[in-house]
Length: 451
Image 1 (cartoon, helix red, strand yellow):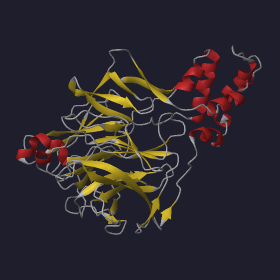
Image 2 (image 1 turned 180 degrees about the vertical axis):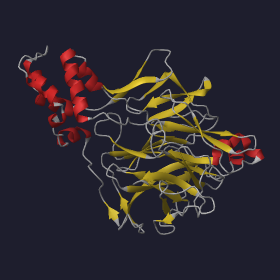
Image 3 (image 1 turned 135 degrees about the vertical axis):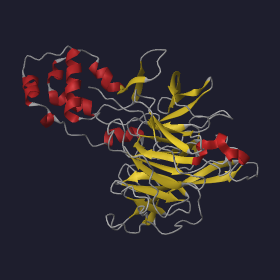
Image 4 (image 1 turned 90 degrees about the vertical axis):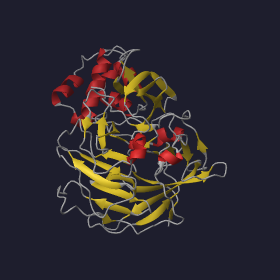
């Protein structure tokens, strides 16, 4: 089956005028604040119209939401805050307007847990232990900001503002370390994974952890988060809960390519394209009785076979299956070396009974409308582009995340990044890495809001 459209596909200019207006949320404002707002003596320096809270809320409701980061100075090492440009400009007019803006934010909770558009964490050519970020919406590199994210070749995960790097024990077992370079949170060193790194590939230890994702931000939920990892040469799934000392390995297990949290469960993508789910929140850590992965799709559901794919939850809450196809460069193929992305295909999985774990069927999606997908080594995400100038709708932003099973023999230079437009099937560049550099990864910095 084919689904011709998915969501809105209006032009950027038409999107703003056609977007339904949010209801002004004066009912959520504390009564004492409403009393002061209704008092006739309230005076605003830029006109009497500002004394009308409904009108002010209406204006704030319809301001666009481009975001920028605020740094503490030329020598800054982390951002102080992320903000909406138009709202800051509104609040900066005078004290009364700032008070009204603050009251609006408290009433609507519009900026609470707000996510920024993803940025690209890229190598800093002068310091191997620090990284800089590239803003897609602004088209610029924040080269004066150097984030402490130590890794030699690749970062194996980006989720909820945290990055996952890999260390090793003396015995050669990989250790996942969670770091948040945007805050002052201390690194989280997780227990060693139960896999061994080949002696001749110790310099490629970061390739032995394919991807790491988090259920929530550990800063916000320090005692109630889950970490899921795909690890090993033929990646198997492992998870660990906050406070636990050992990883849990469900059964059957092996050769997974991607994983996400979807509707409070883990959905893992097998190399052959089939999907399995697991309820990690209710699973006990018992090695003698490992939790069971449940099949959710038919085996090898797509023809032709695609060995590189992603799972993404859409803005509408659908489970999207993204297939990534390659072509050879210069007619050579050495277990993945010399490949270049040519196009993507998207399918939506439909389940008749989600609660009972029914087997789903897929529907091809030709357009994702005003959404943009960000895939790679990161926790795959979807965002709305309506209020994000510089971000292309109906597109897939991808980084180079191909991992060879034999990296020491085949090499792994990162260069395959771009933006795939679903409508005309063209590929453009967002940022080009130099050869022989570390891999780039999408990151979503935390948003502190306007309070």
